[in-house]
Each structure stands twice: as structure tokens, then as C-alpha cells.
Length: 248
Image 1 (cartoon, rainbow, N blue to C red):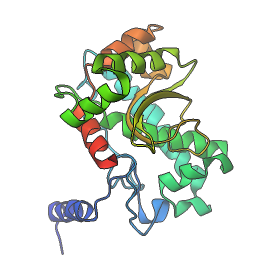
Image 2: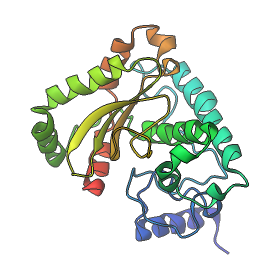
Image 3: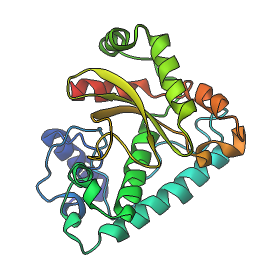
Image 4: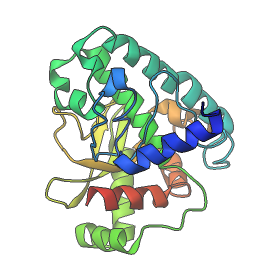
């Protein structure tokens, strides 16, 4: 019988072999599909639905840009609530056997509980993985694509930041790759994202910024622009580069 360490290593080899690159597309055989289907829409591998996935860094890892107390509350209260409510919303329904991308593709036909909590669960899994300190920046391929789409990297940052600043109320700003393989920036309300059939913009999300007040209010109060400026110091470009490569 495999010990725990060896079992984990074998599990990692399995996921690498089948090439799962989805936003919790394999969350569990019961909840998000028993066929281990490859869905290339985010790069969040093998998160088990039976466990609330751990934060990939310590609460204080992004200080001083995102403070530890905000990170703790954001992850352990808000994200955990989305996860729990989403699991409850799909329990005993036909959605239990589907991937997140499949659920999002018909989200307009689902309940508000599925839409809001499913979006909140996915968006935060995504958000944690595009945060890190010390990232080297966009790859050559992504830099070229950003320049082609926006004129320059600085112009992209300006457009993305403006999308985050001008999102009225709660929501997200996104860099995404459209079906035409071109980069674009947009913002979504509440917990919507570009994988949802009701979204006015559609594509593979590459970078997302949470602009709900709970993401920044303890440190920045009503100064959302200051939070957005600080965000650029903790973008995990290694992960964004990887997502772009997979999506292309």
C-alpha cells in the first residue's frame, strides 16, 4: 500500500500525464466530471472538492501591498463561503457531474446561487494563483502579444487599471484571450467571468483583479486606485505566462 508521500507523488504524475489545465475542471469525479476531461481554460489543476483548497502562500506573503489580515479574511471567510455555498447549491442536482466550464456555459439557465457562488469559487481560485512577489514579468511571447493588442505593456497596464477603477460597485477586471486568439481587457460585475454564457465578453481568462471592497478596504479604505497600483507589484507573471502558452 502506498504511503501518503508516495501517493501524492503518483497523483501529481497522473495529472501531469493527462494534462489537466483547467480551473478546477477536475475538482472531483463526483462534482466536476468523472471523465477527467481536459479543458484548457485556466490552469488550476486537481483541486479536490472534498477539501477547501489551501492558499498557495502565507497570509503575510504579499506585504506590504496586500496586508495579512485582509488576506486572511478574504481567503478564510469570503472564499470559503463561496466554496461552501456552491457545493450546497449543486448537491443533488445534474450539475454534480459537470466541469466548471460546462456549468458556466449554461449559467444563464442556473440559479443565482450557482452563478454567484460558482463564480466566486472559481474567480478566487484563479486570483490566488496570479499573485506572488518577485515575478520576472511577461514572457517574450506575451510581451509581444500585449504590445500588438494595446500598443505597449505600459498602455496595457493603463487600460487594465482603468477597467478596474471604473467597475461600478463590486466586480473584477480581466485580461483574457478571445476566441480569435487576440488579447483584450474587460470588467465583469459581481462574480461573473468570461467563461459564462451570459458574459458580454468571452474567452480564456489570463489575469484577474478582484475589486470587491473586501479585497482592499482594511488597508486602502475607499482608495481603490491605490490598491490597483499596489497590485502590479504582486502579479505572478510566471502563472500568467503559463496560461497564455496553454491557451495559445
